[in-house]
Length: 154
Image (cartoon, rainbow, N blue to C red):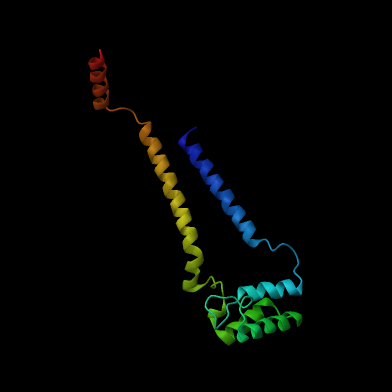
């Protein structure tokens, strides 16, 4: 197999893996009930007084009031974006467990992907470079060394 075909195979494998990750991250799995939506939203907001704990997991009074707000707003037909904006207005951006993918916070989402892609490119380049070195034509010095080694064996 030529180095180019081998590289194309690895690139294809990486593209398939990325496609599977995208499908897994985007797939919502159908229509949610109100209770499922309330639970999912409660798990996606941080308790303002707890350290790294979601509203769903916290026993703090403020977390209970946020859970109630989410429940009331979902029952009233309020969109998730409007609920998000209400919570950000009341508690600040820190209430989001997942940082927004905008501004400097976008680096949290972009940098890991960039490192994986650059690492894959680096590995592919190293493999290709190594394959090119191993199939190069021998130099005149290499031929002389081989000739001397053959004479010494006789």
